[in-house]
Amino acid sequence: KRAARQRRRLLTKRRLVKKRRRLAERQRQKRAARRRPKSVAIQRLRTKRRRRLAGRLMTPKATQRRRQAVKLMKKQERQKAKRRPSQKSLKRKRKRARLQPKKLEKAKLLKRKLEKAKLLKRKLEKAKLLKRKLEKAKLLKRKLEKAKLLKRKLEKAKLLKRKLEKAKLLKRKLEKAKLLKRKLEKAKEEAGEGEAAERREEAEAKAEPEAEADAEAEPAGDVPEEFAEAFADSDIPPEDRAEFCESWRLITEERGYIEGRNVRQFVQALGQDCACQDAVMQQLGEQGFDEDSQLSLSDVNKLLSGAYRPRAQVQDDLLHSFRVFDRNGNGFLEYDELYRALFQIGSEALEESARDDFDRLVRLVDKNQDGKIDYSEFCQMVTMGVAELRRQLDED
View 1 (tube, rainbow, N blue to C red):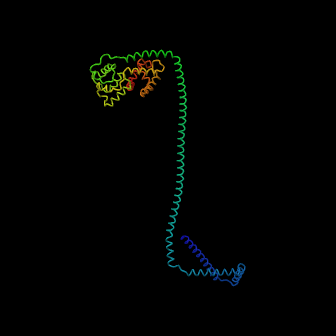
View 2 (tube, rainbow, N blue to C red):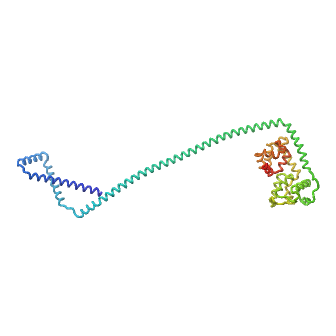
View 3 (spheres, helix red, strand yellow):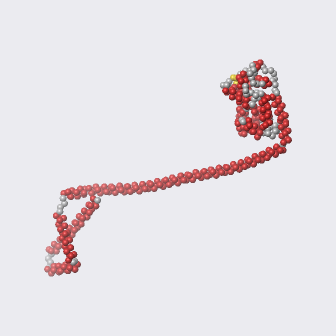
């Protein structure tokens, strides 16, 4: 506002100066014209021309107005000429003149700052635009990753679908193979009923004398005096005591005691099954014995009390089990029959062996290597126990 006021004042001053110069010029010309020597005739002609022009161009009212305006202008010029600037006004003028360059510098500085601000605003807008583009690019990247992930999942789904179709196809083939196997078994059973009956009779004829011989085995002699006291409160029947003494002497080697690691072998030599062996080993741990412990004959009798079964009873059970498991009655246990037998016995370790390592198990138990298990080999397999079988399989 101050700058605008200054401009207005400067313009008014310039206008007044111009007007004064014009007036001064006119007055000078008039004075110069008055000083010139003119004839009376020329002056009269000029006055006549002026009057004519004035009468033609201007009306009385216009001339009056013009005269009044001229008078007023002259009066104002006189008043202005009379006025003189005061000291305060001069000081103000000087101060304004001094401050004007500083104000101009400030204005220039402000102008530069404004330009910088505009430039920064443009840069900020560009940065915002770039930020939006970056966000869009990130969003597109995420969508692309999702699309790739979906593509991979789709490929996996297709692969799984193919595998499922293959599995279904294999399942159908397996069902067909099982059906063919059943038909073949039926055909074999129908064709070989006569042979099966004959083989069964032969197996029974072989198995019964062995079982009777084992069941009716009598002691080779009287029980020695050193074992008489040990058998006083024992559950072992008299017909099994002679075999007990023989097994004791063989395993102890006439030392009079047996170590804890050989107890299972001793019970197995007595012809006991896996259940009796496991019960004896459980009693061994409960009574505080370990593998290095030395057990006397009385200690072993205490362990066997309640778990020992007569040898004849064990042989009868084994013969009955063999006949139950031998479904086709040919006197031998084949793969399917052995698998069912082990499953019914409930031995998980033997079941795994029959399923995974059946060939090695057959080689271990099958002494005559005919690919089948007869009664004597079956008895040996059952009485050997799970741990012994696994150990011998590992050694093989």
